[in-house]
Amino acid sequence: MPDMKPQVYKDERPAEYFDQFHAAARKGVGWTYPLVRFLVSLPTLLIYRTRAIGVENVPKSGALILAPNHFSQMDHFFVGLYLRRHVRFMAKSQMFGPPVFTYIYKHGGVFPVRRGHRDEESFKTAFTILGQGGMLLVYAEGGRSRSGELGEVKPGIGRIALESGAPVVPVAIHGSERVRRWKRFRFPRVTVQFGEPLDFPTEEAPSRERQLEVAEQIFAPVRKMYGALSG
Image 1 (cartoon, one colour):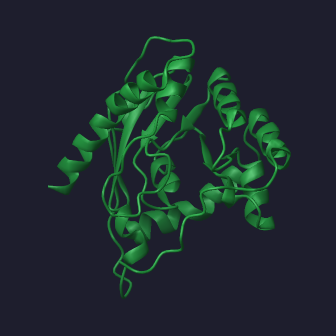
Image 2: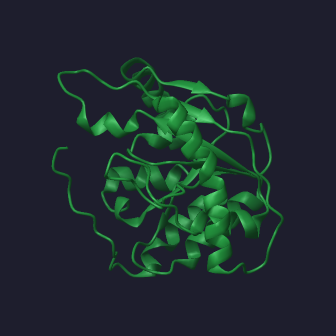
């Protein structure tokens, strides 16, 4: 595996810096979303030959959480390629900073999770989007797996599912673990499989143990689909 930059797990910038992005995300999706979607869709289809299975499992309206595994920064494009709905997602705060990309994120409905801190603001934004009937992508592992194998789940997605009561669609992305390691223009083929929606009764202030329990229940179908796609 090629050398990868070390992860920076704590963002020292003040929380107030990120307020602008949360405010923008809570208002909705701006003009950069359809533009980026248009620019990225064709290369995603042609280069990675992306195919989707089970798109019919994704409700066409209403609050919804998408719960994929995560290997590549391209994963959100792979997931959204065959979906007509806007895919909103939380991203690590380190992605916010470079002017051009930050502008795109801010006006495209992306919002930050302040790494290394208990970031309640990111949860507030997630609940706001779901309360507006939006579709939210939350990586169940909390960040990219750098091992090439599926990682361990984090409790965050369990908390969002339980406190919002929104249905959750497990998503397996296969092939994106090789996106960073292509050689001589031999790009991996990527398959995205959408599982059947899962429903959890709404719970107020669930314990961390309960959050992890639900997160594991959400990720179990992802592991099963991913294993079948690997076979």
